[in-house]
Length: 144
Image (cartoon, rainbow, N blue to C red; front, side, top):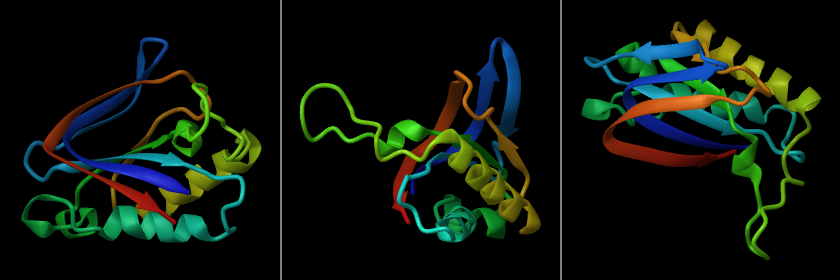
């Protein structure tokens, strides 16, 4: 499992012209979490990922989303699992199939909500337009 976590002041996801998820957080900052689920991920790897999204101190003042009460925009991103070592075409064989990955994304969102965080999401499997205003910019890669 991989995630790209970006500190943002706002972010949104649009599908077919409809905004399906958005955060606007100019004061506290928020986190745009692009998450890729791997075919060989441990069954409980999502727990570690949820904890990292909630507790990594990447917001201004070295605060975490939990510390700041900052919102999270969680977007499934299977392309993070692409292998590019050989050739010119990425291989997606390391990505989990949709029927396995969708419940994992849902579990991460649910876990973040139980921590008291506001969580918006994209639409799994849809072609999404993601817009963000990066703060810093500050972006980290997380692997579980």
